Length: 101
Picture 1 (spheres, helix red, strand yellow):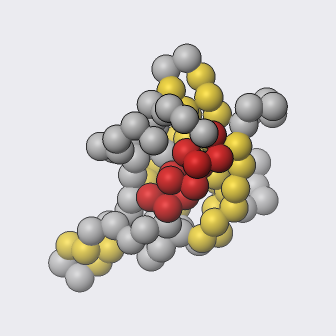
Picture 2: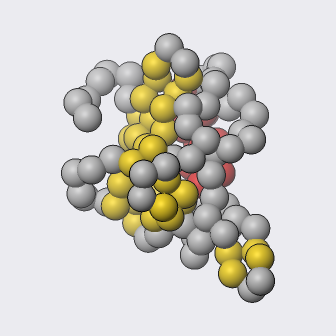
């Protein structure tokens, strides 16, 4: 994935359930977040911090409006908030059902 002046990147730590990706399942621990604007919305990807391969967060792309920094903060809050607990285990979070950020 090549860099773009419109890309927004952050590093964060997931909760125990992690962040669900389309390609590889749940990612947990210290993660890099990449938000990349495209015609159909904001594409959101994660990778293990410091690695090369990016993975699409389930529920991406997200429709956006407004300030890009505010949108990134909303996405970080969503992805670092614990998922639902089922059978005593926290489920991974996704962006599915996310209202416009």
